[in-house]
Image (tube, rainbow, N blue to C red; front, side, top):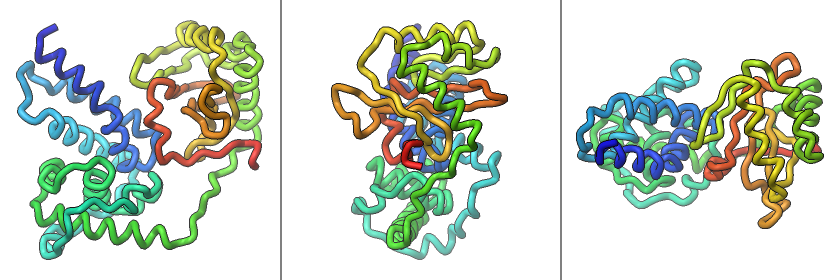
Amino acid sequence: MTGHQHELEKRLSEMRPKLHRYCARMVGSTIDAEDVVQDACLKAVAAWGGEEVANPDGWLFRIAHNTALDFLRRRRRAPAIENLETLEMIATPPAPDPQAAAASIRTFMRLPPLQRSAVVMKDVLGHSLEEIAEVNGVSAPAAKSALQRGRASLRAFTDEPQDIDLPILPDETRKRLTAYVDGFRNGDFDAVRAMLAEDVRLDLVSKLTRGGKSEVGEYYGRYAACEQWAFEAGAVEGRPAMLVYDREVSLDQPAYFVALSFSDGQVVSIHDFLFAHYAIEGVRMQRLQDR
């Protein structure tokens, strides 16, 4: 491994939490954001030509930004992009806006992409207006204007009544999720493994991926040997998930979560955020027992 290659991999590891915070607000989902970040990292490795990158952070953010927009286009969820000539006529103060930074991930999706990117980069991640303009490929005045409009819209959204209820999981999904979580609670990991589909996919976020029932089944050994965690069935962004609590820290607030997908009563995908606690920031969660 060359020195530059080692530096790129190190930078990707260090930048991953920031890239995730950005992508989560760009695509409106902390779970989808991890897939976007992983895709962006693969694109960065493929695009890297073996030479030192002059501005690696900006380069990585541009790749993540474009990957997020590609994701939105595939999902047909991207609002129309603003008229740049109009935006360039509007001024805005450069200071961060704490209220904008505290907005929920889902709220950011109500903004057009340029406004969303400007607010996230400035108020959540602390980037300069010049960096916002560079990543989005617009002029500095357009970046300023998008920031002002995005902040104003977010302030208006926070004054509206909040719809905090997540979609109710279908009865069959709730039943399978509860059985999965009960296996963790009772230490019956043979029962958990029996729920796996033959082609199940595991993403132990930022660490490894596995495919197939036999390989994924080995991953439960870590949980079987550890008494640190407590488990509860829940929903994250309306999707089935296992909420995980650290007994040494709090049994009121989850430390992280494991997002699950079911098909025909079997587990077909697992996104385990054990090594990516940063993903829980701003995410909408609900315990099933609260239903």
